[in-house]
Length: 430
Figure 1 (cartoon, rainbow, N blue to C red):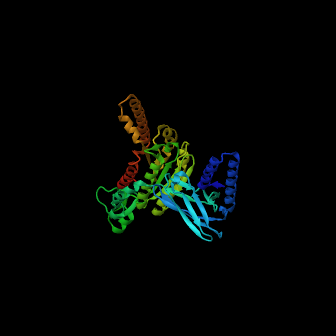
Figure 2: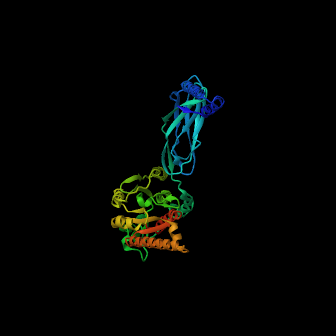
Figure 3: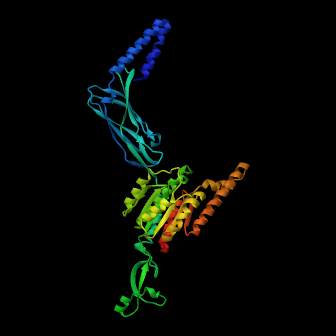
């Protein structure tokens, strides 16, 4: 049972007879009148259980954009029902105007629509749908909450996709439309040609030489279609926020740009996301399918307050295949976490693969290093300087193991990682 504003107005109206006849009997009589009217209105109000509610749920939407979810309410009764419906969602789903006025005639149906603008990446599940139907007097109502399943997946906004056209223009100069032929390098056979002074004698094709009766050599080119393995660290170090967004989201942005770019180059991309366990595995041969799968599968993946087990993640990389690949480790350059967890497993990775460590830097640390106008700022600058030195020391340790380190802020990291990938393609090092 629920009371309406009319019920409150009726109770206030009772002040008039009490003021005229200020006796206890007057109060009791008015109170009895209100109880009878309220009870009668509740008994005459239609039951919310009689209504049938079906949801036409949304599937997914990019973070920052809006979508709509629709409820279809059917009234199987012969009488008209009036009331209010509330379609409840978690606050992060961004449900606007989730309360709807109902007036459905007997045997008819109506639809109500709620606009959703999610504010956080991931899955958002609908809460209960509450229906309140008022009686004929409008004093009281019968109310019931029903679970009407609904789910919305908020996808990563992928802001770095604006850089994709410019990088694709560079890629078109490197692929089959303007292929770079590097004589004597690479492992993919290109063509046969006559021997000239300076050619490596190991490239002589003796069978072709016997047929043509003069020296013929094979020319090679770098392999065009290679394997890219991207590892997303979802441990506690990725939960830190940089510029209002988690480091993990910035790392995902870089991973998606590299996935899109490598897909256009027809390289095979595989993505692993995990910490102590693997939470997501993405792979395939179709570039469009892999990118869409990456955006959708990574949407509900969040950072957890646990340490990363790089032994588990390295074993997962090895399980994907022993063929040489470009392995990109998207993890923060936190000295303690890297030195204790990542460094011990890197020699095994660098022995078989080309390894890149990409880290999201915090621009606030750079700003703290230069601000020294007060005592507090001087201490903050000293802390920022120490943090920077630790990151540089960690990067040097990784470099000594043959790992290329990219340390940039959230805006620049996707671009720098994509440019490094293109530079490797240009030099034939992939």
